[in-house]
Length: 146
Image (cartoon, rainbow, N blue to C red):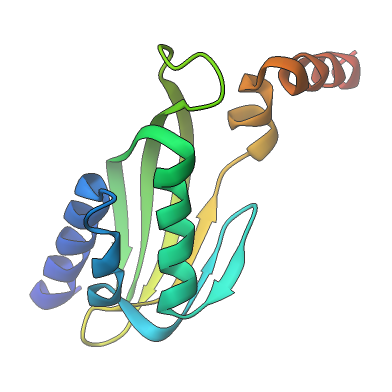
């Protein structure tokens, strides 16, 4: 991987680890105009749509933040392993939640993200943490394992 590509991945990680409601508008500095973003709940294309997803995150949660724990880089691709930390606004706001996942990014020659796919288990990492749904999800998981 070239030094410039390595610098691009460093820059992307720094942005996501420090993203805030005030910096969501800077998404266009890191993505191509027609970039694709996919996670367990969304599949969108383009900067305005990606910006809306991250903006909604700040509207819905207290203190959302990403912590990138490792990266694997191969040419114009990288895989980031991360923790997403937050508190629910609708439920007990004193308990910090942690979602563990990873992002596969495909970069352009100039270091912009053209494809971003997040991988994480919505059932285990999110639904099981919700008050009513969580009880049902844990029960279903237990039944499936017996």
